[in-house]
Image (cartoon, rainbow, N blue to C red; front, top):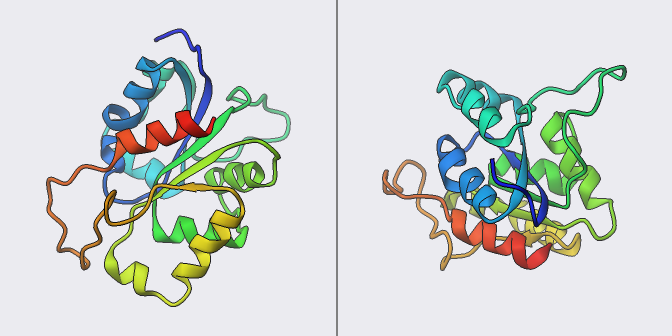
Length: 186
């Protein structure tokens, strides 16, 4: 584990394609750049990564528990205070809930609180397809997040949209762009 020099990066991931590469794509590079990393997953992303055997390696690598459930009031906080949040990948569901202030799981609770905390940067990469982007509410969700000072990693130059199930299978998420944005924003 690298000694943190940048602060604590709160990595929040939802159940979207690419989440299986969270460790090599985002967590390991963030640690190499001097961040201390605290990982929180939506319940479904937690189930996916547990099934793939990724949770224990993430915990060993970061030295912190991976959260996907809330703690009880008498339990200590498992993560240190976060200096910047990165939500990647963010499913269309996660983006919609975040824009609407719906904090119905531990991951969304943390990020919704961050949006209400002055000077706490939040970076979001929506991992969506063209059908999600055509939904009538989608532009409103993005506008709401932008007005909340969220740094969106979004657009055709970063993540060209494809129709459902038509994206190239080998396509990697823009992990470098996400991490660069966190460093510029924090």
